[in-house]
Length: 318
Image (cartoon, rainbow, N blue to C red):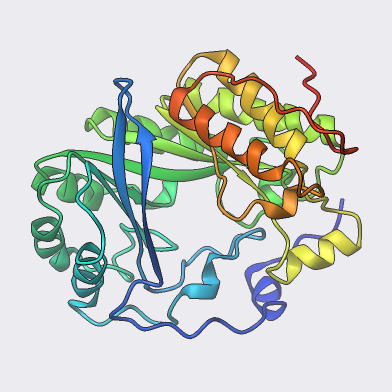
């Protein structure tokens, strides 16, 4: 195993951040997602411009669109309004701030009432948060809402050697305790699970650990799991790739993990299809295979395979 990278060394290997406006979200989009009750909901996702996450995770590249300090008081609400003025109506709203919604140094609890007022009318609100920051502020925010709250948390992997090296400052038990805490207060939990975490370079092993991590998440009380293919490009990941401590996943690996996770039938499983072009070497079948994954996201059912003459053509191992 490679020597561990700490927060300081991870930051030193980064490129410069993108220039962002604290009063404008750096991205927003309209999408669809399957509800837990089995019907398709429309979703407005807002990627808020805010303070960089306090946890410098090894594989993370979300810091690229963050501020060094918290956004000015009231700026988060202005960002939400900016996006919603340009988005259609929807059932669900996701407020992702590239960090931890309940980190009071990023978003002040004093802003909760105005934020809640500006997102009234949604059936569900999804925010992201570190398991160690699931505290009274989650409960305070939830109690003020008139809809369902869902907290998305990164479990990443339960591999006993790899998770400590991710610099996430988390154990599987921490994640389980946070999920139990949230569930006890009627808050749903979504887990982010990595495909091809660094230091797991054998494809079969990577797939196996992704599935074990999904199983652990469901056993802990998670309602949904989102699989995130680990990408290079944040500095340290490129070095790990060069030194053979990381290998980008393939589209076939993502397809296999998705199928096997759906066969567990223990909760909803989604795969992240945003900017996954790097997973494929074939332009002939990529869009069709991506479309297949997106349909599986919406149906939670395995769809017919896409046939292609390319060498990377999909072959199921199930």
